[in-house]
Image (cartoon, rainbow, N blue to C red; front, side, top):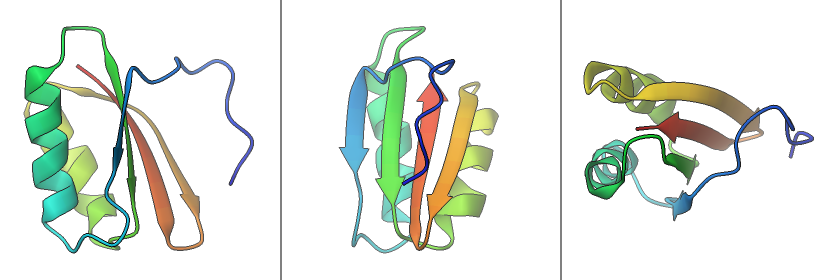
Length: 82
């Protein structure tokens, strides 16, 4: 994977959605964000190609902040802040 950006906050939670078909990574991300406290950061790892469209858009539509998106081959890593 890409070298981690040290200016980004460390995630409070990690959601491993590797192997899960869409829309499950996006749905699970939103469900996880609902349970978190304001300011906490969720790392979502997915290999679903459609998640690049779903997760960032859904997060923004629900008022969450997309801090970072990284891609390493088929694997996508999202950092979202509530």
